[in-house]
Length: 100
Image (cartoon, rainbow, N blue to C red; front, side, top):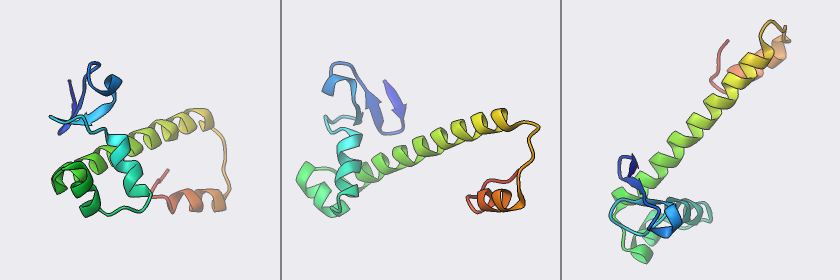
C-alpha cells in the first residue's frame, strides 16, 4: 500500500516497515544514516539507491514531522482555549512560525 509518493508499507516486507517503493530499504534506516553524518552519495552507493529515492525518504519524514507538530499544536490550542498568555510567550511561539 502506498502511503506517500514513493513510500510503501507491506506487512510481508520488512515486517511492515515503511520502505521505498520497489525496494526492501526502509525509510528509518535512510534517515538515521543521514542523521549520523553520512552523505546522500554514500547512502546511494551503500544501498544502491538513486538520489531521488533518498530525497523521497527525507520528504516523507519532513511531512510526518509537520503533521505531528500540527497535531500537538491543535491539542495545545484546545487545552489553552480562553487562557491568557504573556507577550514573551506569544513572541516565542511566533518565532516558530506559529501565529495566534
